[in-house]
Length: 408
Ligand code: PLP
Image 1 (cartoon, rainbow, N blue to C red):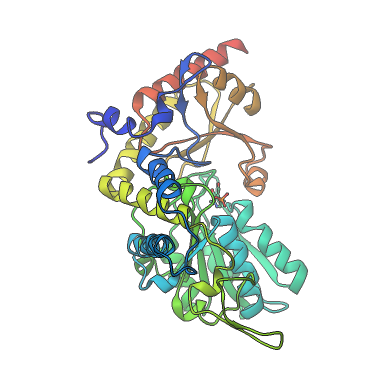
Image 2: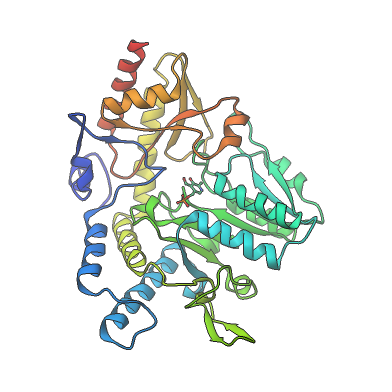
């Protein structure tokens, strides 16, 4: 089904929470970059697995354990197909983007990076793609370099190229900024990084749910993303990595599942991807994530991207009619995320009053304080769209904005 204004109500019926009232008003949920709502098929898959076939995976010879293992491993193959990876050995399940990035900072920190080696990130990174590298800097003395952003919210690619030296080993950048909405040219950035002999990590937390992604085309070395931002459950995420690299990297955590043999003298590690999956995995979450992927693919990622782009354009047009509106991030290549401030109204007051009118938005620093510093503000308000939002909801948001503005 192609999401459009004709069939959107039918599609919204898949998401029971969207029928809720907040303070006796219909919920207008515009905080999708933080997390998306879940279709009934995802929630049903979770309930069904706990009710009917719950058992620990990879361990039991019994029927339930084998069934649960089959679902878990089928989910890995589903993820592999969804992002165009070469092999399911390249798909590591984690708790989410943050854990995937911490795993990479630790493991690449052990294998690839030594004192004085340089890692390039960008001004528009989420804290989860800044802090793990700073922790590594404290442990190992690596050097962090930062790609600047222009006033429209685009990365300065010339400056990016200039940052490389013979000590640069790694680039780690967001595909889509969770504040500015900018879609970064990661294909081009990967080509540049590889030309310089460096690896590249792409943070796909805000892109994988909203557009077709193919890791082979992008030619990233690693891609990380979260289930909960793509209509799947919370607590499950993915680290994709090229097999040739993952196979050389040391494990991140130790424990059950990730070993072949253990004795007090010596332990040997499992093959990929299990080497990186210590402990009981979220096998219910992985299956439910596969169901979310089925849901997305039935709609078509191209169709979703096109529909959300319509919403973005409509919202940008409408928002610019509000007096005192300042929008941050006006790249020509922009995803459905709009951060803004309105002159004379603190973003926190704006969010609180909009909430009273049934409109859920995000306010604050959006876990990206360096972007706030770049644009000289302490915080911003943000609306972000998903495949179930409508132009009518944008109208309701704009009407609510005007009402709040009148109160000041
Ligand atoms: N990276 C980006 C670009 C994000 O937007 C987010 C969350 O908002 C994250 C990383 C962290 O994701 P999670 O909290 O699911 O680990």
